[in-house]
Image (cartoon, rainbow, N blue to C red):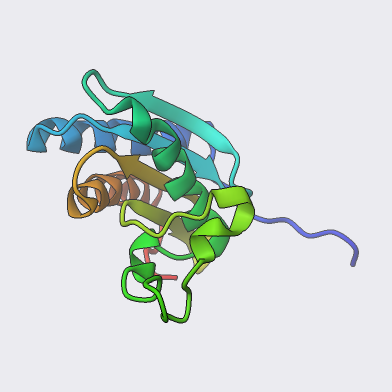
Length: 148
């Protein structure tokens, strides 16, 4: 067969993720830039909350891009990207879009990455917490399995 069907996140799913991430961001009182992409790393939805850092706009988008494209949370690179590490320099790949800072998480359905969310403005742990809220909301809404 020369074609195949691949599940992907819809705009409705992206809006669910975005709303949940915004709600969590408000709870922790850290305004965020929040990006949601589909399985092909294309932007589906974006929000820059009032007070979010302007310099974090592209970071949020690139965290989502990296999480979807590499099919892993951006936090997995924390210990591997330092000089001498096995992934040192990976941040220069993909025209400099590869993010190695926590806050990008893939959205998985039945073991397949259907999209991802990326958040930026807070500390990496805060960004990841807000992104996880978005992922969890999509899983709950559509009954997705969350494991890769």
